[in-house]
Image 1 (tube, helix red, strand yellow):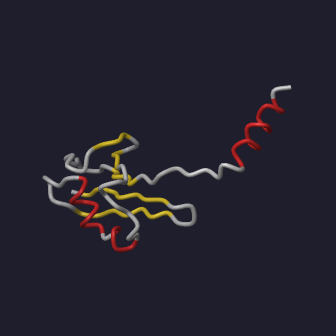
Image 2 (image 1 turned 30 degrees about the vertical axis):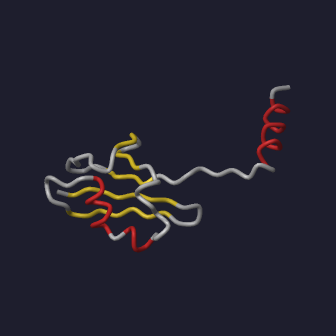
Image 3 (image 1 turned 120 degrees about the horizontal axis):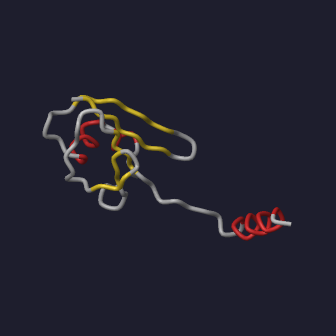
Length: 93
């Protein structure tokens, strides 16, 4: 069966379609895709994963056409957060 694997960084996005066995798990599909070699910073023990935007476990079973997503932590520059909040407050006038 075919499934998709998606991962995104600020400068690069990757979307793969791969063929997996019918009883494949999220972990199996990610490992089989080769994405861990391309992005060695991905640690499946700390990164969250999901299917079509819904967080799931690595041992979750896949269905044909599922899109497996690997999520990374969201980071924000603490110096820009107050500026954005002030700009949003100015718009309310």
